[in-house]
Image 1 (spheres, rainbow, N blue to C red):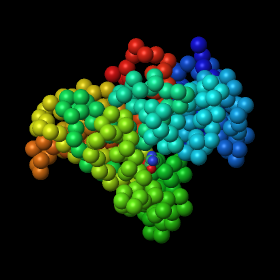
Image 2: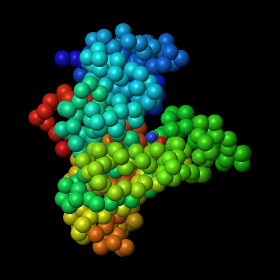
Image 3: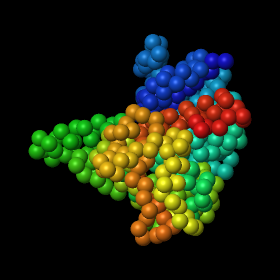
Image 4: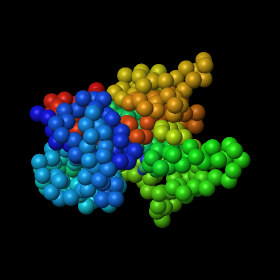
Length: 340
Ligand code: 2RA
């Protein structure tokens, strides 16, 4: 039956992508309820030839709602996801609020679809960089156990929101015209610049973004002792994230076998041409569903290691698409897997 679907954070970059994807994927929406903070509420929002009014989030608004897709930040999710779940809705939360809660499944439909059906009202959508990484790790780990991953990310402005994307456009124009770029949204100017991810640093010298990749990858893939070290970097790209990934196993992993497995993996697009030196770029995946993987090669420093490069749209598969695919899993019920 058509569902009553609430989008919490409807005006944000991910919220806008959720609205677009619900329509594109013909998700069975009977009634769409766009929600936002009181300061963003009260504005009209066009969706599927309907003129809707963005409503302020409240306890009463969740009565009779079947699904909440939340992407309004951790504090909003911590406050309202339990309220929505108590009212009987299933909440797919894109924030980090509940990702490491043992009672909350953390799901990438192509990797651990069965976890979605264990939910108790809330399902967590992983961090964008983790979603993209696990799509490449899963098919390899299914063949030979992964022991260690070292990953460097090249994260687009989109990960810092729509305003950061607009700021990058503005700052780039300013620099090109010989002006001095001033960043209002990001900690530094991203125009023709890059900087280490500005999430809070931990005593061990890693930032929260890097520790999300370790902890979330372990949970999604069910490898509690996986050794993973990440370095997360913000780069002057608008939408898609890129990652350089080093993976080591207990034994050699033939490159041809890895290439075949990745080429057949759900959610992955193999994009590599060594003759023409053509490998994934952010522009190849912007606005598209797949994670593009390429430049798969033997690690010259470790006979049991592989190196690969990937790009994925942070707003789409890195957030909104993954959340909707989780909701689609729930509609399919226990017999199906993800987009396998
Ligand atoms: C980022 N999307 O790029 C992530 C937020 N954790 O910063």
